[in-house]
Length: 236
Image 1 (cartoon, rainbow, N blue to C red):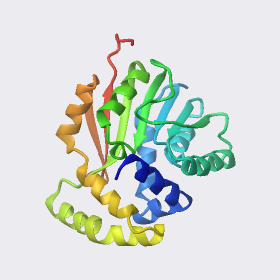
Image 2 (cartoon, helix red, strand yellow):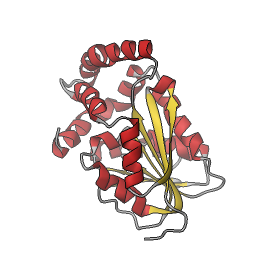
Image 3 (tube, rainbow, N blue to C red):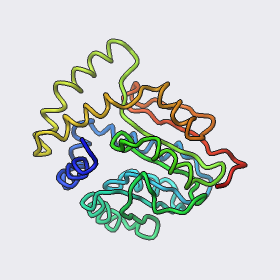
Image 4 (spheres, rainbow, N blue to C red):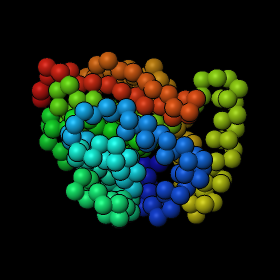
């Protein structure tokens, strides 16, 4: 799918997006976002940029875990941002979280300003992945950290086969049904398949300038958090 088609899809599914994710992941998505917040390990407040913020679930998890931090969320879907802003207001986090429209390939954030950049299940939707990684590097402070959480597949062979059956044959029709589309969760399966495997993506992170890349596996590897650091001595 091209950029306009992906954007149109998120505009369509935004109202039921949170329910769909929780239902189809058996609420593992809640655990994954909390795990990402925990792994940030912020000692005090700081500026966290959450790219592809969507309905602000990750931004809220980070803000609740680190009340002194400032979280800026960026997304290209007005409908997703509308849902996210309502949730931020209802949960009383407007002073800590601000959401804005923007493109992960050209972020509306100044260079060397963020302590950490997070993106949850969003990078596979950006065709120009290396351009986005370059933007993440640009906006991070020297020594700042990148956290990319994406879907993957279990390493254990039997679990892999079981999960692939669910992911390929059960999730798409059920997800399309509850999202009232005929393509949204078919696209999800296709986009996960087309995302690079671990070694290749770690190499892409390194090629963008990040050092000390590592991977944290969640729920037997169904989700993974890729990490990298901007060189401490470097400023752009």
